[in-house]
Amino acid sequence: MALRLYNTLSSQIEEFHPLRDNEVRMYACGPTVYDYGHVGNFRTFIAVDLLTRFLRQSGYKVHDVMNITDVDDRIIRNAARDGVEVRQYTAKYEKVFLEDSAMIGIKPPTLVRATDHITQMAEFVAKLVEKGIAYRADDGSYYFRIAKFPEYGKLSKKDFSGMLDGARVDVDEYEKDSARDFALWKAPKPGEASWDTVIGPGRPGWHLECSVMSMQELGESFDLHAGGEDLIFPHHENEIAQSESLSGKPFAHFWFHARFLLVEGEKMSKSLGNFFTLRDLVLKGHKPSSIRYLLTSVPYRNQLNFTFDGLKQAAVSVERLRNFKLRLSSGNFPAGANPEMQTLAEETVSRMRAALDDDLNTAQAQAAVFEMVRRVNAAFDTGEIRKEDVARLLAVLDKFDEIFAVLNDDDVPKMKQVLDWAVAEGREKDISNELRDAVQSSELSDADIEKKIAQMKAARDARDFKASDALRAELASAGIIIEQTKDGVRWRRK
Ligand code: AMP
Ligand code: ZN
Image 1: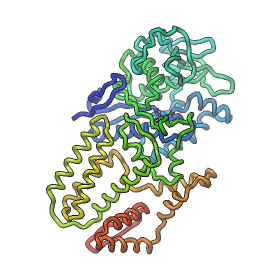
Image 2 (image 1 turned 120 degrees about the vertical axis):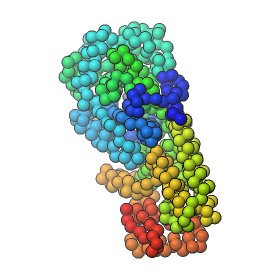
Image 3 (image 1 turned 135 degrees about the horizontal axis):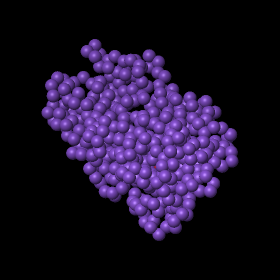
């Protein structure tokens, strides 16, 4: 069965097939690197990460590009305010973005930066001018004449036919009812960064940046373009107008938009001040894996309200999965296979696949794996698991984790990095006791470890699986790997 995805352009769920054979070319709008990203931004980035992971798991070769917006109104303003070069200003936030993405398990896409493509952007404007689609204003800025693109509004489904020809807007973000000819290129203002180019000095508008970089990396027509739902208008509408009026070809085939993360019913955003960065949450003692799991637990087009209860619930789910995996991999089972378990493994893989094929229904995919956990746990307790079942069941978990990426327990080293960062930034007062405890508990001595392993064995002998699982989880999160050998339990540090 093919992947069925919602396409904002057609407002329908469609079967996804790449334009070229087996190769998927996709572009996602990345972060504007003027500050720390918040969890809302990462809902969108994780939705894109999940999509690329699933496409790869489905056998496609994926060329996934993401841009770093390092030229925009806020960056230019802040760099001028601080009296530094644009790249100097953005370097810190670009690094933060890369670190945060790694912390939350995002596989790095091919990254492109606006500041590396200024020449091509100016050339793109020159070509639009040649075609009579763009024009130069008296101050040296260039605008896109939307009257020249009759399909303007086809993505956001707005009718702009009655609009005043020639009225202009020069900020990057604006409301639908103030749509006008938009700035492709902005003339320099005193004290602000600008570049000398074939069309004169200035800097690109945000919309132009993504058109130029996506087409350069992926060609005039490519498979999929992604971003948060707020980008539908004007950003993506303008990208379509610029790109299609230059190439005369359809730009992106599929438009993929993640729904906003909410906090108490309102969108999480910088301007409303109701946001948490990833580091804010880790400072409070939450694990990166809990954040990732929470953000994947609701399908990308459904409403997700951020709450601390939800985050705790996500931590419990991850813990259950990790315990289950440990129990499977460190248990001693009799030889043979239980056909029921073999069927269960097969069915779970099909259910996960069917769920993700259904417009990335992550909640259903997770439900399928938890159903397996529940049934296998019951079989554990009645001694119905055989050696050959273990490999099959572990393979199901591996498939699950190729997409969800929460089973590898590397939370503590990541949390330690945030703790060290907070100290370096002089933010000790923001470090919670929970974070300190989590990091310290990873520093177990050899004697502590031996003691806990002995307690674990005693609990298991007494069939107190809850206690033995808790000990095993504690050791695992401290980076201790336990192996069951014929000579008994052996352990080593990760
Ligand atoms: P920015 O760094 O502001 O350019 O945003 C980066 C990405 O995050 C864009 O795709 C936005 O649409 C997305 N985004 C911003 N706020 C949220 C939110 N509350 N929930 C989901 N995505 C968001
Ligand atoms: Zn963009």
